[in-house]
Picture 1 (cartoon, rainbow, N blue to C red):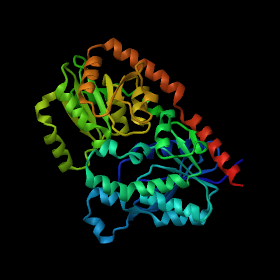
Picture 2: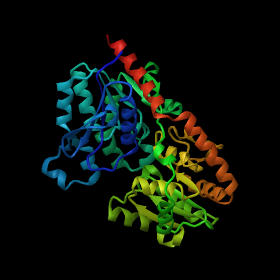
Picture 3: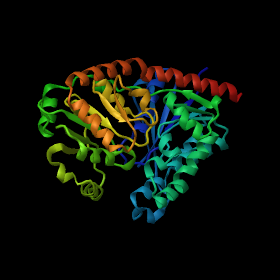
Picture 4: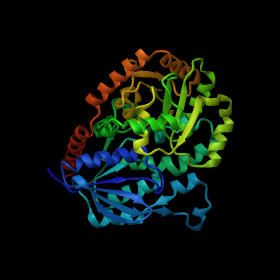
Length: 404
């Protein structure tokens, strides 16, 4: 059964691509090989372009619903208030047979798109990337009462309504059934459609690219180096990571990748966690191109990702396909990616345990290579976008048959 399918990738315009956004794009590209397919993204301007493989990408103008106040509102409030009436109008005009939502932020925009689907009797499914953060914000917000209230009011309510009306939820790994239980998603609406790895990071960077990266971040063969890549925010556990650096006993270096979104936020981070006292142990990269990141993956000795709330992070798969051992946390679907045969897991927020695992891997090149090789083979066997596209299409067909 063929249909007119549309994926909608929800994201505030101007933000660097998140894991949910990248996962949505990669799955859409693979689906376009199998069936007529379009993708719509929230953007700062409207345009349409044809991409290879038959995937049509539509970009729709999006802006804050706060009016003139949006220019002076705090950045988090700006992002949650983004809406795209143009994309909602596109749904109403084209009336696809089925819509697939990716990424739940901003949740208000997601719910408006879902409402449009409901008004026109268009079935929709949603992938679970970002569900852990939305389902239980206490994991990463802690006891911050004001932020918890604001998050519940502005984000979680819209997210819950969207999930409750979905015809199917595509979980990215079996461990996410725990999150699905928390959200009370019926078993007959749950399907496993995992993420895939990016083949770009499997390709070898040039010697000049690696030399340049190693010189820039002072990476040498004498001292093990670990890489972190992600947003410098509480939910990614960067606070735990910097605290672990102070507790480490072995000599190793930490490269912290990811865009520095705000000079003030960055300075606060440095001061709060006394990064100056760590000397040369820690270096921040700021934004990295794909080529720079590939060279960095292939220049370090391990990958560390102490996330407090996550689904099935793509950066972990990219690190594994680069044959890096991974130290991460037992949250979301990460245990489906990483175990004692491919890396090490610690409880989220446990800086002492994190320091111990970093020290353990720093002490043994043989162990690092053993774990990295096992991780590489796991990714090849378990995480493939083309395989996931076939499974997603089966879900679409299942939903459409039951809509008749």
